[in-house]
Image (tube, rainbow, N blue to C red):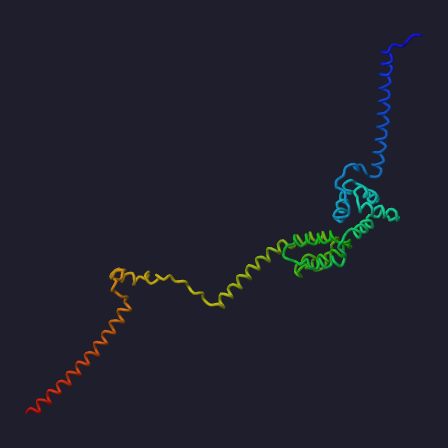
Length: 304
Protein backbone atom coordinates (compact mmCIF):
# COMPACT_ATOMS: atom_id res chain seq x y z
CA UNK A 1 0.00 0.00 0.00
CA UNK A 2 1.37 3.31 -1.08
CA UNK A 3 1.56 6.03 1.52
CA UNK A 4 0.88 9.63 0.60
CA UNK A 5 3.81 11.78 1.52
CA UNK A 6 3.20 14.15 4.39
CA UNK A 7 4.08 17.14 2.25
CA UNK A 8 1.12 16.37 0.00
CA UNK A 9 -1.20 16.38 3.06
CA UNK A 10 0.10 19.79 3.97
CA UNK A 11 -0.53 21.07 0.45
CA UNK A 12 -4.13 19.83 0.54
CA UNK A 13 -4.74 21.45 3.92
CA UNK A 14 -3.17 24.66 2.67
CA UNK A 15 -5.51 24.69 -0.30
CA UNK A 16 -8.55 24.19 1.97
CA UNK A 17 -7.63 26.95 4.53
CA UNK A 18 -8.07 29.91 2.11
CA UNK A 19 -11.38 28.45 0.99
CA UNK A 20 -12.57 28.16 4.62
CA UNK A 21 -11.30 31.64 5.54
CA UNK A 22 -13.00 33.13 2.50
CA UNK A 23 -16.29 31.47 3.39
CA UNK A 24 -16.08 32.65 7.01
CA UNK A 25 -15.26 36.17 5.90
CA UNK A 26 -18.17 36.24 3.49
CA UNK A 27 -20.49 34.99 6.22
CA UNK A 28 -19.23 37.62 8.68
CA UNK A 29 -19.57 40.39 6.12
CA UNK A 30 -23.09 39.27 5.28
CA UNK A 31 -24.03 39.37 8.97
CA UNK A 32 -22.47 42.81 9.37
CA UNK A 33 -24.34 44.26 6.39
CA UNK A 34 -27.56 42.66 7.58
CA UNK A 35 -27.22 44.29 11.00
CA UNK A 36 -26.20 47.60 9.46
CA UNK A 37 -29.21 47.53 7.12
CA UNK A 38 -31.51 46.81 10.06
CA UNK A 39 -30.03 49.72 11.99
CA UNK A 40 -30.39 52.06 9.05
CA UNK A 41 -34.00 51.00 8.61
CA UNK A 42 -34.69 51.97 12.23
CA UNK A 43 -32.64 55.14 11.97
CA UNK A 44 -29.90 53.84 14.25
CA UNK A 45 -26.95 54.25 11.98
CA UNK A 46 -24.85 55.59 14.85
CA UNK A 47 -26.28 53.47 17.62
CA UNK A 48 -22.86 52.19 18.60
CA UNK A 49 -21.65 55.71 19.40
CA UNK A 50 -22.79 57.00 22.79
CA UNK A 51 -22.90 60.76 23.10
CA UNK A 52 -23.95 60.77 26.78
CA UNK A 53 -23.54 58.50 29.78
CA UNK A 54 -25.96 56.36 31.73
CA UNK A 55 -28.66 57.78 33.98
CA UNK A 56 -30.02 56.24 37.17
CA UNK A 57 -32.68 58.86 37.89
CA UNK A 58 -30.77 61.43 39.97
CA UNK A 59 -30.65 64.06 37.24
CA UNK A 60 -33.52 62.98 35.07
CA UNK A 61 -34.70 66.23 33.49
CA UNK A 62 -31.28 67.32 32.23
CA UNK A 63 -30.63 63.77 31.10
CA UNK A 64 -33.83 63.68 29.04
CA UNK A 65 -32.92 67.00 27.43
CA UNK A 66 -29.52 65.60 26.42
CA UNK A 67 -31.12 62.40 25.14
CA UNK A 68 -33.48 64.40 22.93
CA UNK A 69 -30.55 66.35 21.47
CA UNK A 70 -28.65 63.12 20.84
CA UNK A 71 -31.62 61.45 19.15
CA UNK A 72 -32.20 64.45 16.89
CA UNK A 73 -28.54 64.64 15.88
CA UNK A 74 -28.57 60.95 15.02
CA UNK A 75 -31.69 61.35 12.90
CA UNK A 76 -33.63 58.83 14.95
CA UNK A 77 -37.37 58.70 14.32
CA UNK A 78 -39.28 60.02 17.35
CA UNK A 79 -41.37 56.84 17.43
CA UNK A 80 -38.25 54.86 18.40
CA UNK A 81 -37.05 57.23 21.14
CA UNK A 82 -38.84 55.31 23.88
CA UNK A 83 -37.27 51.99 22.89
CA UNK A 84 -33.84 53.51 22.43
CA UNK A 85 -34.03 55.18 25.83
CA UNK A 86 -33.39 51.90 27.65
CA UNK A 87 -29.84 51.83 26.28
CA UNK A 88 -29.06 54.91 28.39
CA UNK A 89 -30.69 53.83 31.65
CA UNK A 90 -29.55 51.83 34.63
CA UNK A 91 -30.53 51.28 38.23
CA UNK A 92 -33.93 52.59 39.28
CA UNK A 93 -34.41 54.40 35.97
CA UNK A 94 -34.01 51.19 33.99
CA UNK A 95 -36.31 49.38 36.40
CA UNK A 96 -38.98 52.04 35.87
CA UNK A 97 -38.65 51.74 32.08
CA UNK A 98 -39.20 47.99 32.36
CA UNK A 99 -42.24 48.65 34.56
CA UNK A 100 -43.74 50.96 31.93
CA UNK A 101 -43.09 48.35 29.27
CA UNK A 102 -44.77 45.61 31.32
CA UNK A 103 -47.80 47.82 31.89
CA UNK A 104 -48.15 48.41 28.14
CA UNK A 105 -47.33 52.12 28.38
CA UNK A 106 -47.13 53.78 24.95
CA UNK A 107 -43.35 53.85 24.53
CA UNK A 108 -43.78 55.41 21.09
CA UNK A 109 -45.26 58.54 22.72
CA UNK A 110 -42.16 60.41 23.81
CA UNK A 111 -43.97 63.27 25.54
CA UNK A 112 -45.97 60.85 27.65
CA UNK A 113 -42.84 58.88 28.47
CA UNK A 114 -40.96 62.04 29.41
CA UNK A 115 -43.75 63.18 31.72
CA UNK A 116 -43.83 59.80 33.44
CA UNK A 117 -40.08 59.80 34.08
CA UNK A 118 -40.13 63.38 35.35
CA UNK A 119 -43.08 62.67 37.64
CA UNK A 120 -41.23 59.64 39.02
CA UNK A 121 -37.73 61.05 39.45
CA UNK A 122 -38.07 64.84 39.68
CA UNK A 123 -38.44 65.60 43.39
CA UNK A 124 -39.84 69.15 43.13
CA UNK A 125 -43.63 69.24 42.94
CA UNK A 126 -45.67 71.75 40.98
CA UNK A 127 -46.57 73.79 44.07
CA UNK A 128 -42.96 73.87 45.22
CA UNK A 129 -41.92 75.00 41.75
CA UNK A 130 -44.38 77.89 41.95
CA UNK A 131 -42.96 78.97 45.30
CA UNK A 132 -39.41 78.86 43.92
CA UNK A 133 -40.48 80.85 40.86
CA UNK A 134 -42.13 83.45 43.09
CA UNK A 135 -38.84 83.85 44.98
CA UNK A 136 -36.96 84.39 41.73
CA UNK A 137 -37.35 88.17 41.83
CA UNK A 138 -35.95 90.55 39.23
CA UNK A 139 -32.55 92.00 40.21
CA UNK A 140 -31.65 93.96 37.08
CA UNK A 141 -29.65 91.03 35.60
CA UNK A 142 -31.49 89.11 32.88
CA UNK A 143 -28.81 86.40 32.67
CA UNK A 144 -29.03 85.55 36.36
CA UNK A 145 -32.83 85.72 36.27
CA UNK A 146 -33.03 83.24 33.37
CA UNK A 147 -30.41 80.94 34.92
CA UNK A 148 -32.33 80.71 38.18
CA UNK A 149 -35.56 80.00 36.30
CA UNK A 150 -33.86 77.27 34.25
CA UNK A 151 -32.59 75.61 37.43
CA UNK A 152 -36.12 75.56 38.85
CA UNK A 153 -37.55 74.03 35.69
CA UNK A 154 -34.79 71.41 35.63
CA UNK A 155 -35.60 70.27 39.17
CA UNK A 156 -39.38 70.17 38.87
CA UNK A 157 -42.05 68.23 37.09
CA UNK A 158 -43.03 68.91 33.51
CA UNK A 159 -45.25 71.90 32.82
CA UNK A 160 -46.97 73.07 29.68
CA UNK A 161 -44.85 75.55 27.68
CA UNK A 162 -47.45 78.32 27.92
CA UNK A 163 -47.51 78.01 31.72
CA UNK A 164 -43.74 78.29 31.92
CA UNK A 165 -43.85 81.39 29.71
CA UNK A 166 -46.43 82.96 32.00
CA UNK A 167 -44.45 82.21 35.15
CA UNK A 168 -41.24 83.45 33.53
CA UNK A 169 -42.76 86.82 32.65
CA UNK A 170 -44.68 87.20 35.91
CA UNK A 171 -41.82 88.60 38.02
CA UNK A 172 -40.55 91.13 35.48
CA UNK A 173 -41.07 94.85 36.16
CA UNK A 174 -44.06 96.35 34.38
CA UNK A 175 -41.90 98.47 32.08
CA UNK A 176 -39.82 95.51 30.91
CA UNK A 177 -42.86 93.26 30.61
CA UNK A 178 -44.56 95.74 28.29
CA UNK A 179 -41.38 96.11 26.26
CA UNK A 180 -40.74 92.36 25.95
CA UNK A 181 -44.34 91.49 25.05
CA UNK A 182 -44.81 94.66 22.94
CA UNK A 183 -47.71 95.74 25.03
CA UNK A 184 -49.06 92.20 25.41
CA UNK A 185 -49.29 91.53 21.66
CA UNK A 186 -46.25 89.27 21.33
CA UNK A 187 -46.56 85.56 22.16
CA UNK A 188 -43.78 83.07 22.84
CA UNK A 189 -43.53 79.38 22.00
CA UNK A 190 -41.67 78.56 25.21
CA UNK A 191 -39.93 80.31 28.08
CA UNK A 192 -36.55 80.11 26.32
CA UNK A 193 -38.02 82.20 23.51
CA UNK A 194 -39.18 84.73 26.10
CA UNK A 195 -35.71 84.70 27.68
CA UNK A 196 -34.13 85.57 24.33
CA UNK A 197 -36.52 88.51 23.94
CA UNK A 198 -35.73 89.63 27.49
CA UNK A 199 -32.00 89.52 26.78
CA UNK A 200 -32.47 91.77 23.74
CA UNK A 201 -34.56 94.21 25.78
CA UNK A 202 -32.99 94.17 29.23
CA UNK A 203 -29.39 94.80 28.18
CA UNK A 204 -29.91 98.44 27.04
CA UNK A 205 -32.55 98.91 29.74
CA UNK A 206 -30.03 97.89 32.40
CA UNK A 207 -27.50 100.48 31.18
CA UNK A 208 -30.17 103.17 31.19
CA UNK A 209 -31.32 102.15 34.66
CA UNK A 210 -27.79 102.24 36.06
CA UNK A 211 -27.27 105.73 34.65
CA UNK A 212 -30.58 106.83 36.15
CA UNK A 213 -29.57 105.43 39.53
CA UNK A 214 -26.30 107.38 39.40
CA UNK A 215 -28.19 110.63 38.88
CA UNK A 216 -30.61 109.74 41.66
CA UNK A 217 -27.74 109.13 44.08
CA UNK A 218 -26.16 112.43 43.07
CA UNK A 219 -29.40 114.31 43.81
CA UNK A 220 -29.84 112.53 47.14
CA UNK A 221 -26.29 113.45 48.15
CA UNK A 222 -26.97 117.08 47.27
CA UNK A 223 -30.15 117.09 49.40
CA UNK A 224 -28.30 115.57 52.33
CA UNK A 225 -25.46 118.08 52.13
CA UNK A 226 -27.96 120.95 51.96
CA UNK A 227 -29.87 119.67 55.00
CA UNK A 228 -26.69 119.30 57.06
CA UNK A 229 -25.44 122.78 56.19
CA UNK A 230 -21.92 123.74 55.14
CA UNK A 231 -19.32 121.40 56.40
CA UNK A 232 -16.74 122.94 58.81
CA UNK A 233 -13.52 123.68 57.03
CA UNK A 234 -10.54 122.13 58.82
CA UNK A 235 -8.01 124.85 59.76
CA UNK A 236 -4.39 124.26 60.64
CA UNK A 237 -3.25 125.52 64.07
CA UNK A 238 -0.59 127.59 62.31
CA UNK A 239 -3.02 129.27 59.91
CA UNK A 240 -2.53 132.70 61.51
CA UNK A 241 1.21 132.56 60.97
CA UNK A 242 0.63 132.29 57.24
CA UNK A 243 -1.36 135.54 57.01
CA UNK A 244 0.56 138.30 55.13
CA UNK A 245 0.22 140.92 57.91
CA UNK A 246 1.31 138.49 60.58
CA UNK A 247 4.31 137.38 58.58
CA UNK A 248 5.48 140.98 58.13
CA UNK A 249 5.05 141.66 61.85
CA UNK A 250 6.94 138.51 62.75
CA UNK A 251 9.69 139.44 60.33
CA UNK A 252 9.97 142.87 62.01
CA UNK A 253 9.81 141.67 65.64
CA UNK A 254 11.25 138.22 65.20
CA UNK A 255 9.40 134.95 65.24
CA UNK A 256 10.59 133.79 68.64
CA UNK A 257 9.38 135.03 71.99
CA UNK A 258 11.91 135.39 74.74
CA UNK A 259 11.61 133.54 78.00
CA UNK A 260 10.30 136.70 79.73
CA UNK A 261 8.44 138.02 76.69
CA UNK A 262 4.72 137.42 76.59
CA UNK A 263 2.34 137.33 73.67
CA UNK A 264 0.89 140.61 72.46
CA UNK A 265 -2.55 140.01 73.92
CA UNK A 266 -1.10 139.33 77.36
CA UNK A 267 1.24 142.32 77.08
CA UNK A 268 -1.67 144.59 76.18
CA UNK A 269 -3.71 143.34 79.12
CA UNK A 270 -0.78 143.79 81.50
CA UNK A 271 -0.13 147.32 80.24
CA UNK A 272 -3.74 148.31 80.70
CA UNK A 273 -3.75 146.92 84.22
CA UNK A 274 -0.56 148.85 85.04
CA UNK A 275 -2.02 152.14 83.81
CA UNK A 276 -5.14 151.63 85.90
CA UNK A 277 -3.06 150.89 88.99
CA UNK A 278 -0.89 153.97 88.37
CA UNK A 279 -4.06 156.10 88.10
CA UNK A 280 -5.31 154.85 91.44
CA UNK A 281 -1.94 155.54 93.01
CA UNK A 282 -1.91 159.08 91.64
CA UNK A 283 -5.35 159.76 93.09
CA UNK A 284 -4.25 158.46 96.48
CA UNK A 285 -1.16 160.65 96.43
CA UNK A 286 -3.23 163.66 95.44
CA UNK A 287 -5.65 163.10 98.32
CA UNK A 288 -2.75 162.71 100.71
CA UNK A 289 -1.28 165.97 99.56
CA UNK A 290 -4.60 167.73 100.07
CA UNK A 291 -4.93 166.39 103.61
CA UNK A 292 -1.35 167.35 104.39
CA UNK A 293 -1.86 170.89 103.10
CA UNK A 294 -5.02 171.35 105.13
CA UNK A 295 -3.27 170.18 108.30
CA UNK A 296 -0.41 172.59 107.81
CA UNK A 297 -2.79 175.53 107.34
CA UNK A 298 -4.58 174.68 110.57
CA UNK A 299 -1.27 174.51 112.46
CA UNK A 300 -0.15 177.86 111.15
CA UNK A 301 -3.51 179.39 112.07
CA UNK A 302 -3.23 178.24 115.64
CA UNK A 303 0.29 179.53 115.88
CA UNK A 304 -0.70 182.97 114.76
